[in-house]
Image 1 (cartoon, protein in one colour):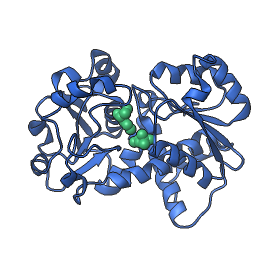
Image 2 (cartoon, rainbow, N blue to C red; image 1 turned 90 degrees about the vertical axis):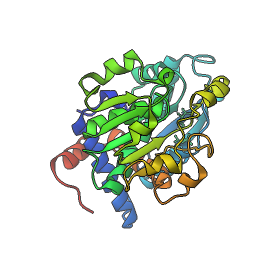
Image 3 (cartoon, rainbow, N blue to C red; image 1 turned 120 degrees about the vertical axis):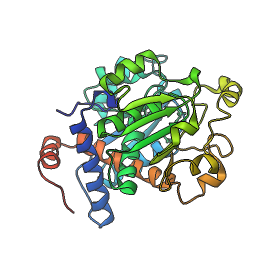
Image 4 (cartoon, rainbow, N blue to C red; image 1 turned 45 degrees about the vertical axis):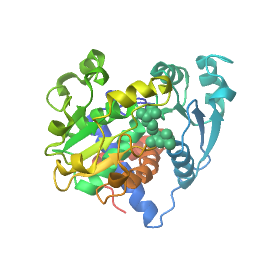
Length: 321
Ligand code: CP
Ligand code: NVA
């Protein structure tokens, strides 16, 4: 049973995650072959941004347009979630106007509270804890470049943050190994480890030596060392992560066919060198494009009137087209 909202992959089963991946591939093929969908004709998405964005905003707005719907941008300052008005009242008011809400915010609890009080689907466009839309797009990109999403070794060089947490959950759901290579003070917490459940130590693990971590990797992944909201820690983080850069040398110690991923925006010279960003191993712009195809699948599944039919269609038979 697909949940009303798309908040965190922790709530997802392997089966439902695979269904979303299949639907994303199907919608991408259809769009590229010239088929124009109307599943979200007349539907409206409200997008609340309490943090900046390029990819998330544009990919949601263009993506819903490709399905016949429309998106509306609302800045965090304007809405004043929890300041001008309670999260509960914002959820109840928006539900009277729109068919879905996408939110990018700080505390994950804000996303949870919004979803609890909204009668329409809520999609997490990044919280301090999770970035599930990114992870879905990442697995779509891995499927395209590696021909599968299972049995791979996916190494994230960076901290335990929203992107690595969601990616670890996605890899685990798909049957791949996820290894976080991080300084000891920036590792997954005990709460994270409990959340990974049986996957911890089998499919999800962490190491502190990046050279040891990258051996045999199919994918090296990184993200900024200082996430939005952590700006005051920037200098401290620059020092802590100095040995955790994806450089040509580190890449050469991974598998020869190893690909490099980054959710973007990238800071060349910090978490990744310009040389690696521009190398044939980097598939970062495919990832960025796939944000749109992945989120079209999420919106198609959660916001269309025929959502149960599409679940049966994707779950029951191979979609073609
Ligand atoms: N990767 C990502 O979420 O990009 P934006 O912050 O630009 O939306
Ligand atoms: N971890 C980063 C991801 C940006 C897309 C952040 O939260 O700022």
